[in-house]
Image 1: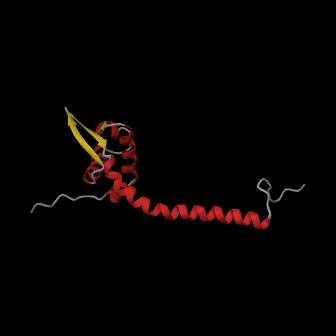
Image 2: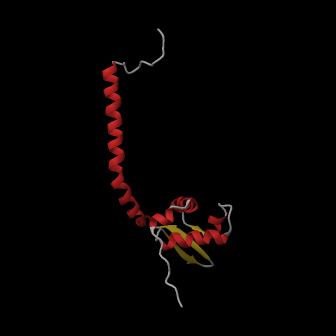
Length: 122
C-alpha cells in the first residue's frame, strides 16, 4: 500500500531550531548539502531529513546541478508567517503604547524630572 507524501506546514517546519539555522544559512546564499552539513554537528542523513521537511513546507528548493544538489531559500513562502505575525503585531504595538503612557503618567504625577534618579542624596 502506497502512502501519500506528507506535507509539512510552514509553522511546523520553522518550529525546529536546526531548521531555523538552515534557513538563516540559505538566506545568505545557495548551498549544497555538504556545505550545510559542515556547519552542524550532525550527520548528513539528519540534515537531509531537515531539508526534506523544509522542502515539503515549500520554504526551500533543491536543484540538482551536476553531481550536487543545491538548496536555496524560497522567500515567497514566508508570506504565511508574515501574515500571521502581522495580526499579533497590533497587540505588541498596543502594549508598548500603553507602557509609554503609563511611564509618562507616573512621571507627571510623581513630579519626577526626566534626569532625576531615585536614591540619590544631594
